[in-house]
Image (cartoon, rainbow, N blue to C red; front, side, top):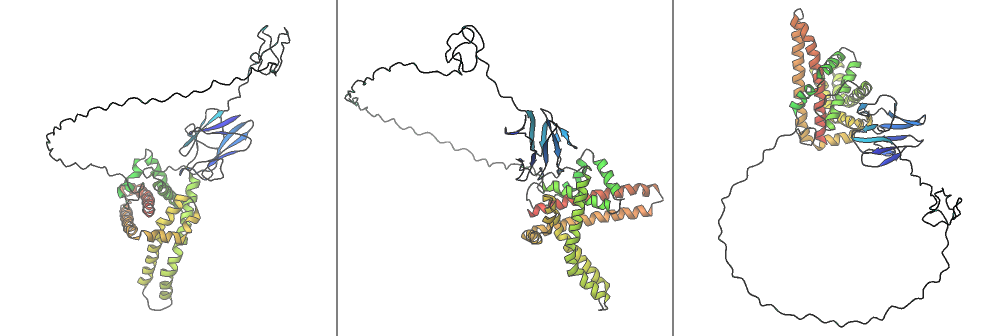
Length: 419
């Protein structure tokens, strides 16, 4: 028999029924941890032992410090890590068995419950054979005797002798005033406030520099740059990568650059936010763009610039709410959380003043970044016949991927200002 020992000392016996670990209430072991999925991992019986399987969790499962892939047969001493919780797979201790008693006269083994030794015939006592059944001897108890009569003793209080009070003479102490020295105000370091608390301010330097703090940032940039060459699928994967960056900012891990490891999750996240963007752009299209388009092409005399203004208003209205929509999906992983229109509008309008300033600042930074990319593209097209033009093409793709990471970080920060 095997048990699963938690880090807090609780033991969970393993039976023929699978044992599931996750954040949902119907799991066998419930871990209220933001890094743990609803149904994270499961231990299943197999061929007299047990195997561990990851239930497609968001952050994965570790066994002895290594990421779990497929079925893993468990052995006593294995350490399972789910989120911030650790469990130890161990064999259950066998119940202790009492040794058979021996005869105190001849040393022969006794049968449990025997009153006489089967070898020497001597009578046995309860000490030599605890399993035997005994009968109290027929001995009359001694007669009851009353205790001696109680005679109370008279109480004699001790004699009181008052002490003479001699007051001590008062000697005033000389007071020497000390000069006042004002306290020195403490010097506090300015911590990162955008992801860990509701400071209400964006940390642009953190968003620009965090991709280069990872040890493998070069390979991550190369893979992200190559994805720009794939039509549609590459864009969906890059959108999913931006969602993962925003999720880490929301979960207080803003300085970590994600790896290109869980392609299925990134494709699912990118497809989800792409569909949410189309849905949220439909209503602004009906309000701002469609009337100007109809009036322009039906001969009402409106110039084309009005149609362009309507399209611009549609884009601004859509992207004004996208940080809240993308942040709710990145935090919960639930597609329907990005469609709760009433809750999202109330969340944005509740902190409209501070959110509007941060949103305009983030938009200005994105416009500056797109302008720099446009200038680089123009320089590359003009000087394509020279080596500098050819060398500028990888730089453009790398800068474009940096914009994806920067955009995900800024969107995560904007959502944190709303919570």
